Every structure is written in structure tokens, then in C-alpha cells.
Length: 304
Length: 73
Image (cartoon, rainbow over all chains, first blue to last red; front, side, top):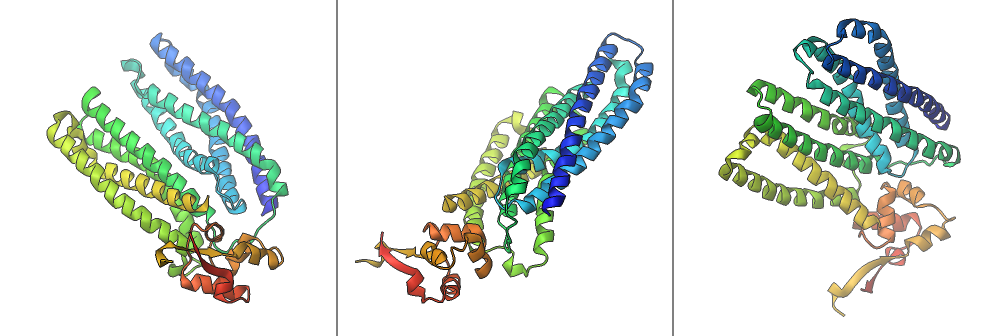
């Protein structure tokens, strides 16, 4: 395990450094492409010239993401103490890998729409680049900071793990909070500032919801795979049951209060009609945020 | 003294040290809970169930009262 983690750490570090160089290259290309579109240059031949190098860099990005996610899973198993940075990187890593496919769709749209002027897809593309950059830089921080402790750390036998349980709560908080923000901002913007046809708004809400929830689904799935070797009654220990019971009560009360407030606002304030379209993902992300944060609070409160 | 003033205390830390300075993780593995649960019991922030308290006492070959006791808060 220790050897495998060391190999995975080093491979990911090398791929990460190459990917940062690749990110500088692709962003230079995107900025040049944007300028060329505004200056009405020969966009087609410019895109043809750079399509293979950009695609090659994206293959390296994909390899790095896969290697990074493998390293994060190995670290989750190896280090038996929870670590917010690791959980945050798991969340941004999954989001970033989904956005790699998003980038390709955005570039395809840009290549078709540039003839009508500067496509608005550039804003999402640059937001996605910022997300990749944050993931790459923080991944280097994690790899460097944990690289030395892999050698020193004793391989402890842990029959009942609590670090994945705590990390799942961190990821639940990140998924819930980002889902609430994304769904609210998206639906508010597209129902007021940039009106969209209903089908497009619905598709947008589904896509943003999926991007936010998939990291949580994956960590829960991973936890579920680990728990399959235990009997259902032993999936949690008694303190975890107690923490989750308290968290469920907090979630029940707080979600009723928030959803009542949301209902009253949309009932009396016509500008908040967009809630009609998004109440379901809004409710799901609210419950996820409340449950994960209160479970984490009760777990940490009794441990400190 | 009213019973509501009494709080469950324990000698878990001493028991672990007397038992070859075993770690919280080793005790957690032995009684089938997480390390965080043992840590919380030791700190007096979590009251174990009767089953878990008995399992811990039995592991150290002690009676329940030798490991867990009530004390005025």
C-alpha cells in the first residue's frame, strides 16, 4: 500500500506539473482565439492549426485527473485522519474532470457560433479554466505536504473507519453549498437577466445539479463498496448513529423553516417565481447541506 | 445527592496505559467501534451504551465499575 501510494503520488506530481504547463498553453490559445474572433481574423485556419496540440494537452489533463483521483482514494485509505484539503480536492477533482468534457462541448459550440460574434460560452470556458487551475495548484500542495509523511506514517489496522465518514460529510457540505449557489444563480440569471426557453432552463438546471451532486454520489458509493463486507447493522457505530440522529432532527426543523420561507417569498414576491422551476434541486441541496454540516458538527463537537 | 447531578466518568485512559500502552485505535478495533468513539468516551463527551461499556470492561478483564463510575458534575 505504502509503495503503491508513493508511486501514485510521484506520478501524479509529474503529471500535475506537465498539466499546469499545458493549462498555460491552452489558456494562451483561448485568449488568442477570443482576440481573433473580436478582430474578425481567420479563425478557421487558426483553430485547425492548434486543434491537435490542444487535443493532446487535454489527453494529458485527463490522465492527470485519473491519476489524481486514484491518489486521493489511496490517501483516503492510507491516512486514517480526516483532512479537509483532501475532501475539497476530491470534490474539485470530480467537478474538474466533468468540466474537461464540458470544455470540449464549449469549444465545439464556439467553433460553430463565432461567425455571429463573440460567443458567451467563453465566460463558462474561462470559469472552467479557473476551476482546473485551483485543482492543479492545490493538488501540488497536497502531494508535497503528504509526500514526506507517507514514508513516516505507520500503517495502522483500522477495522471500523471514521475518516471516510467524516470526508463524506465534508463533500456533502461542498456539494450542498455549491448546488444551492449554482441552482439559485443559474435560475435567477436565466429567468431575469438572460431569459431562456423553458426547455433550455430546465436542461441547464439539471446539468448544474448533476455537476454539484456527482462528487457526493461517488464518495457515498465508495463508502458503500467498503461497507458491503459488513452487516447492515454494523455500517455505523453507536456514536455515528447518535450524531446522525441529532443531525436528522436539525435537518428536519431547519429545512421546514427554510422551505416555508421560500414558499412565502415566491408566493408574495413575483420576481421569485423562478423557485417554481428549481424547488426540487433546491430542497435536495438544502437537505444535503444541513444534514452533512450538522453531522460533522456533532461528530467534531464530541471529539474535541 | 440527586442523581441528575451525577455524570458518567471513566478510567479508560489509565486502562489503556496499563494494557501495554495500547492505542485508541487498537481498543476501537477490539470492541468494534471507531477511534473517534473511543476518543469521545475518554474525553467524557459521549456516554457509551451498556453493551459497549461492558465490552470495554470485559476486554480489560475488569468489572464495569472499575472502568466506568458516576461522579458529581
